[in-house]
Amino acid sequence: MGRREVLVGRHIKIIITIILAFDILPSDCDQVYLAGERANGVYRIQPGTALPFPAFCQMTAEGGWTVVQRRMDGTVNFDRLWQEYRNGFGNLNSKCGEFWLGLEKVCAVTGQGDHILRIELQDWDNHTQHMDYPFHLGSEATHYTLSLGSAVSGSLRIAISPASGLRFSTRDQDHDLKLDSSCAQHLTGGWWFSSCGQANLNGRYFATRPRQRLERKQGIFWKPWKGRNYSLKATTMMIHPAKLSV
Image: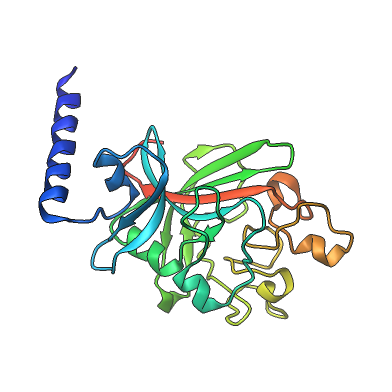
């Protein structure tokens, strides 16, 4: 074992000792990983001065990822209003449940330093694609403006322009770039819409292709990968500190 591995091992033991002695909650899923946990599941975290909350942690070889969004079966309705997207909703406590963590909680986690956003998509032939982006999420005062850096890994073609500065929109709060209509009302779900046409991972879940053209536009889509009218089978959005290698 090299000197670096020994130091990392000592660092982890110190973190575990502090947590056990003072009952300090980890600040994110990466801290859960550093404390020795390796199982995917729900853990209680407390980023910064925020109130503690449960988060689903996805553990990988790189560390712990805090999952922001998960879609897989249509059991949760994502056509929600601003307050619900702000606070979060869905079946967080199941290893196979759908949920949205909540924009305020994501802000609390990412406010601790630079983070990477990973987007994973799956089609109905079980093919997958992903992409990792450095990103920044603004506060509610900015309507949770999303700014992305250039992709650092993965082969998924981009649907949100780097440094685009897109604001979040829902049916009751329209902040998209389309002047003559509301993307959230037209497509359903809350998202960082530009002019409606490139991506919406919070649209309606369709297990079969809808007959109506309007319904096909309301699905879960990522236009550069499968096209505008292809509704995806599964999606995951998750974050981890940018200091980790990916």
